[in-house]
Image (cartoon, rainbow, N blue to C red; front, side, top):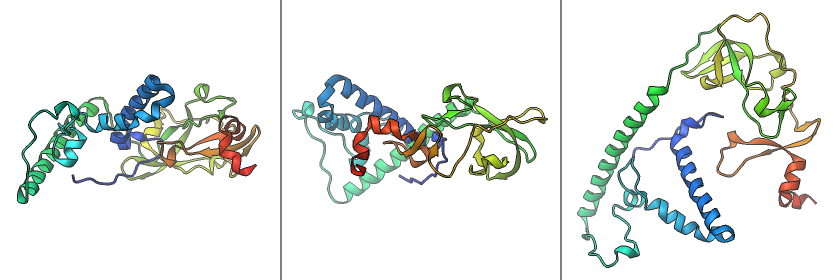
Length: 253
């Protein structure tokens, strides 16, 4: 299928939009199973898997099952209907090659259509060395920034001076010493241009980066959540985790 590996950056899930969209669909299906079947929802997982694999996909104009095996899945509802033509030898190879060519063309058309939708609302952000930009504060669940919870905390800090450009979509910032523990290269989506050269900068004394996981309210644990990447791991209070998930600490007792 001419697939390739794309490396994504932290807090930028749009790099892998296909996986993001599939996860959203699967979450909706699992949510429906949990609501409908309550306690026995896990027993319906094979049916949810079958439903997704046998569902029509607009990008390839067929179901994932048909794209993989070259034929539609025959459910019990169609057992009384005539079967498909049996292929042998070179016919199987020729049919598989035809399917691959058709899928590639369908994907190309779908990607072009999706790109036109995205480009209609997208604008390129470009900065020059010497510009000042504001830095978006990435959300960390359970932590307080600037003495308030994350939803009420300032969304941006700075401004900071751009000292170098890294590639097409990343910039290196001149960060103060108090942020020495933060990597100073950021994706363009995390930056917002400062329209005037600042005379004063917003103090970030309350945004402390420490080498250990202790802070005034207790210890923190770095948590990698299911169906999330390592870059999306969050810092959670150990006391809260012990209360909600005691089984995780059973081996330490």
